[in-house]
Image (cartoon, rainbow, N blue to C red):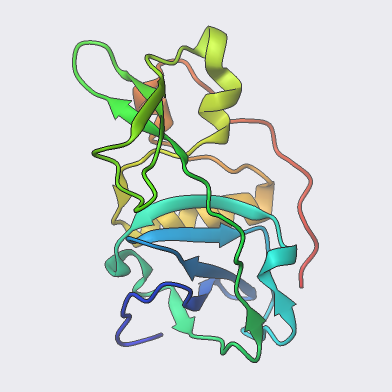
Length: 183
């Protein structure tokens, strides 16, 4: 495990999710992380070009959420970073009388406070695909929650943030998708 993790845009970390299950994450701007549809049975990543790997999801998180998971920092000689523009659409939670979310677009500096609202009050009836597709804009601070989500995806093919079940009563997880092969 890495003893200290400092934030640096473009930095790649190798995460150990459990024995024989590793994945990569790339730090983007302003504590925005990019996860990839990529696993390996060992912490070896030589020759990986992340621009050719499908993004799995983007979330805001702290370095604390990576502690206990991050075990190495592959070098730029081993892994080529993803230079594609990161996803800017996210869901902003509505908490209060009516739970739910708005679809927003982050600013160029990846700020949520000044984000543009693209659609307000998403509903399961009209916006289910959007709710499945985009991530919540809140910061994830729990490493176990992150680990469980990734393990569930890589073992079962279900890419799902269970926090959406709190905001959208009656929603179920999306169907499993066909998994990518190991690197």
